[in-house]
Amino acid sequence: MARPVKLPAIVAAVSAVIVFTFAAARGEWENPKAKQPPRAKPQRRSAAEGLPPLPLPATPLRRSEKKREPAPPALVGMIQFSGTRFEVVDGSRTPVHRFPTTQIDIERLMNHANARLKIRYRYAPTSLGGFSWDPREMPVLYLTGWTPLPNMSDELVAKLRRYLYDGGTLVLHAQCGRPAFVESARPAIASLLPNRQLAPLDTDAPLFHAYYNIDRMRVRKNDEPFKTMKPYIEAVYLGCRPAVIFSPIDLNCGWDVENNPIEGGILYHQDDALKLGINIITTSLANFQYARAWGTQKVYHQQGDATRDQLVIAQLVHDGDWDPTPHALPNLMKFIQTGTTLNVQFKRQVVDPGDPALFRHPVAYITGLRDFKLTDAQVTNLRAYLAGGGVLVADAAAGMTAFDVAFRRELQRVLPNAQLASLPLDSPLYQMPNKVRAVEYSPLVKAQNAGLNAPALEGIKIDGQLAVIYSPLSLANGWEQLGFAYNRGYADTDAIGIGVNILSYALTH
Image (cartoon, rainbow, N blue to C red; front, side):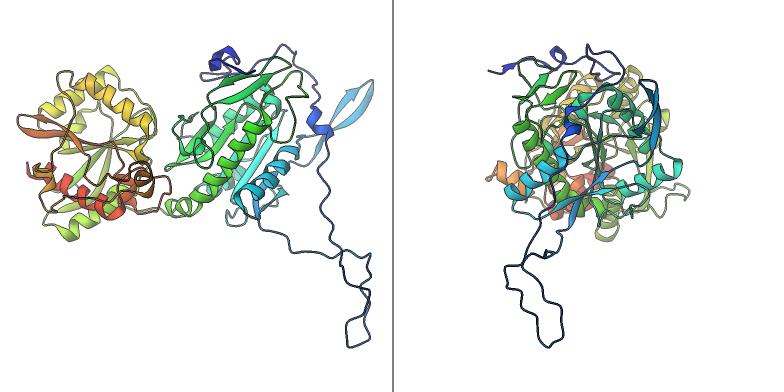
């Protein structure tokens, strides 16, 4: 019977985050999965007799001839690297695949997903050299192996980066958890998205709850007994979606590790891996239109103008995902400009919380998806900013719990003698220019709390005025109006109405 353990009990660190090491020495290692060939493609035969169609002459279709069916659309492109290298084996120069891989896992996953989700998709082998780089052709690229990843040219890296920004998703997993793949995958991902953070997904991430609710997973190292752990996947976010999904543990969908352990390997139980794989497919499909829309850049058309006595918002940077909703503020500013008498300049200034330049801005905005931590200098500067009359607007992007926990913790450091409190319906913030009484929430919030229809903002007052305004349910996803399926927040119209009120209050009090 599986017994629960913490992650460090079954794996050890590979870098600053996680490393998988094994007793097996480095060197040649045979992957038993590689000996399992892909299943032969189904052959369809006509049930009709061998009668020629009219008019004659024509060639009869014999009963034994294959009848080709239209192929289902490709959802997943399995990346294969061509070429060989030579090694000396038993004194002979022997060709070896440049990057060996297997199709056993993706083949089983696609069959299982089609049956479970009632969809009809396929995977297709592809190469980076021959791929069109259009996510509409293949929304997901899949890469797996157990040897180091081949180096990619700068041109290929640029094309793959563009594919991700255009809405594609890249999924990587280490066959059998092999460290050679893990250690090469991290710098490869860093080169793709150098300004984005590869980090573990929090357990409340949609990927763990999209179809199956996955709270624990069974994992096996070598032939040791199965142990249970929280699901572990690393990801890089573009917007609020995981654009790069990386598992340093084998997402084992096609190998019965329960009855056939792999020496020198660490693999999830097949049943658990299939559930996680279906969640990955579900989120990739659900996020596709959002991802396509998010990749269209919104421009602050007054970004280069000299600052006048108009609204310029300081967006605070931190060591988490600090900018998951870049389209939110420019979209909100358009509504403010057309619906209020405020003089709005379309400009966002990215500011470090510890920078004295923060004091030039009447309003500061902070958001994110993950945990973050402020330095002591940032805490001190932000405390002085609020005491001097600045207003901090905070928003948990997509309603993510990790940011909520981090923001409350860090705010306690900034204002140790103050507490966030729910804003009552008679708060001035809810009065002008929009009178807010009842609000509509996103479908995900309504599914979890059907009776919720009141706004749920919190705040801290200094000298009788709100100095901190915080929404633990997302406003910015509604400001963006991109239709993010996993938004835990306000419906678009009410998010914009509340946002207009927040900035109007901040500038007039």
